[in-house]
Length: 379
Image (cartoon, rainbow, N blue to C red; front, side):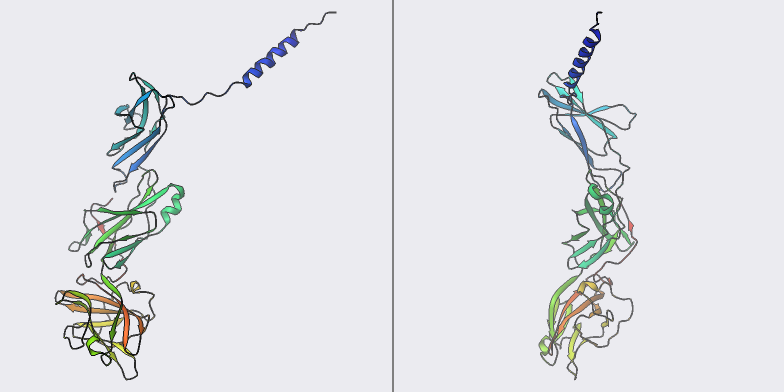
């Protein structure tokens, strides 16, 4: 009997074919295609209208690529148009970005030999708006703070905050349209400095993501810087009469925080010692009244946020360490408010921190007033 060897031969051929398949590898990336096309928006203050977009891509691995054509279109069903030609691997498109972009590589003959995947820019994306914007009036500055809600929601997508400010129109009770960028920060706070004491200003904050998307602005915040100083000291009249009076602002000399003799007629207050040895603040003229800020000590001068509308009188109040005091002071241009926090008291003098609001009738002494403001020109 003869036995056929064909099935065995077929099996060997099949195994050889399978072995050949094992030697095959997946094709590598196209050497003429630009890859990793990404974008970075340029915030403008208007989330729906960025100031521009920066496109970035990786060059092809093939070395004879000499230029790139950048194409764009206004929507996913519109025709592509040539936006620019560049030898760089970046392109800045000024103005409101198009809806989609892609990049094509060109060889030395000017032929397009490869193109990137398209990228879509969705301007309707909005990161969270910073919430709870507060402010603290300082000497020539305003300290801003807000909630971390945007960072908490975005995690890795968060990049920074943008802080805006503009002048305040007191006659109409609105923030003007001339908003400018005060600066940027990655923290939930910002110090706006080099401001003029007594001049009110509006502030707002937005969130920026890593790809440049901007949130709707926070509610506007109104604040007014005021002058202050630390560790002033005034003697009691019985200890040193020549240094027992104080002016928050000396209108004649145009100086702030003046310690003077108790005989001056323009003083704001004097320090008087009672028979039991305690020292007391005493309004020095008919245009000055005062009140205790609170019935408990305050942590710092900046804790004295705002002068009360009523409750001032010409009475003496004892100087007690840690307590805050508010003064209503009549000057030639109108009413001004001031604050004092006592640091410590000795048998002969009082050491205190003080602040003075240069804005006429402005009761802000530390933390900005909470107002719902009209923001002209704000986004």
